Amino acid sequence: MPIAVIPSRFGSSRLQGKPLMPIAGKPMIQRVYEQAQKSPVVTGVWVATDDDRIVAAVEAFGGNAVMTSDTCRSGTDRVAETANLLKLDPDEIVINIQGDQPVFDPRSLDDLIDPFDRNPGVEMSTLAYKIRNPREITDPKDVKVVFDNRGQALYFSRAQIPFPRDAETRTDYYKHLGFYAYKKSFLDWFVSLPTSRCEAVEKLEQLRALEHGFPIHVAVTAFDSPEIDLPEDIQRVEKALRQC
Image (cartoon, rainbow, N blue to C red; front, side):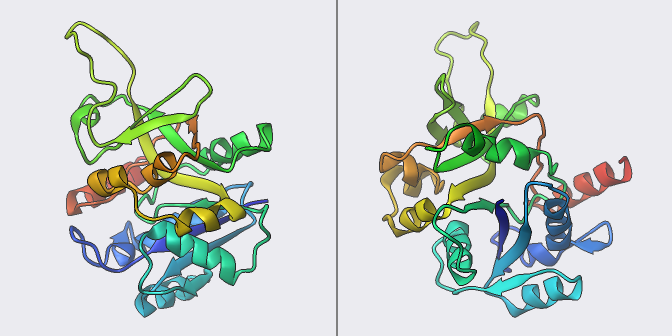
């Protein structure tokens, strides 16, 4: 059974101290942690950080926290370091949960690991959600993904993909949700790879896998997961929580 790791850092260019921002009375990192705990496919949840304030906050609500290096290149590197600190076996599945999505639906984690159950050869998966809000099609904040008939990712971009050459062409668009699952052995290999060209341009680390020739299975989920990047996003999420 998989474990879930939530990489979390205090610094943010747009919202400093984001993990500890209160969301309807609880720190955001606690909201994410509690959602992960609701998933029946997860055996344990850990927060991976390099900040004592986040460790203290997690321990205050009874959660598990791991202090990782302050030189990690990305959240994925933090997840990989945690998997090694926990001495996970190479074939174990590790789930990477974004720390700024406090109302994600735990059922989406079933979708995320389903490819591993159906195909033992899968080494990495991620989630996509069919876009319903037209703004998200062109907003660079919302990453789009295209995939082939087998569910293998072709490309991820902040741009509108696929782009209709003819104005009358209609197609579905899929938003990438930043959740990943990996076999631990693949995760170790992935973080050893150098930053790739398109990864550096788009600032999307999943492109590193594609550019080095490793497939990513895309699981389409019925559950959206709004991110918190700006103060107004907090108000929107709190409103959604009040309506639950």
